[in-house]
Amino acid sequence: MKPNLTILLAEDDADDRLLAADALAESGVSGTLRCVEDGEDLLAYLRREGKYNKPKAAPRPDIILLDLNMPRKDGREALREIKGDPELRRIPIIALTTSKENEDIRKTYDLGVSSYIKKPVTFDGLVEVMQTIGKYWFDMVELPAD
Image (cartoon, rainbow, N blue to C red; front, side, top):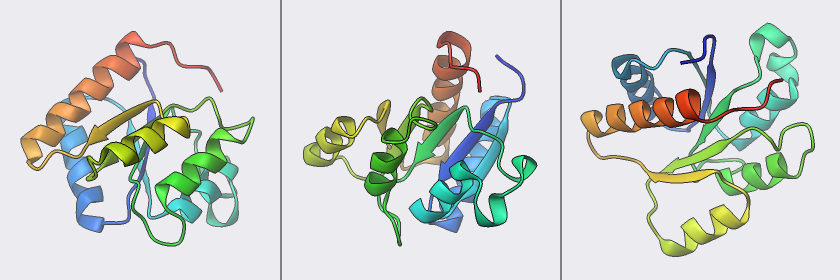
């Protein structure tokens, strides 16, 4: 696994953020999990605006885990803006969400998501998802350098 990986989780639910951090630690995937609470915060982080204006406060993520249903700016809107920005569009984005509606899946892929994963209902399931993400995205796939 590549060293010094940054995973950015865009998730409005504090409990889900904590579970994701615990699942990542349990999974054995090395890397730093950074969290933002909504699409506005996600874009500020990626563009290094506001409280994220220093590079150390907002290291470029190797991958984004994106909840679709968030306040202020939902995941679909944020995804559209990220994929429309030449500086950000190469960052792989995985939709990690509760929706399994075919329309949501289709629209999200149309907007450029790299993968769509339904959030598991158990902690063990979330650990397995984190392990799979780590193995695929960080061991097998070649990601673009900064």
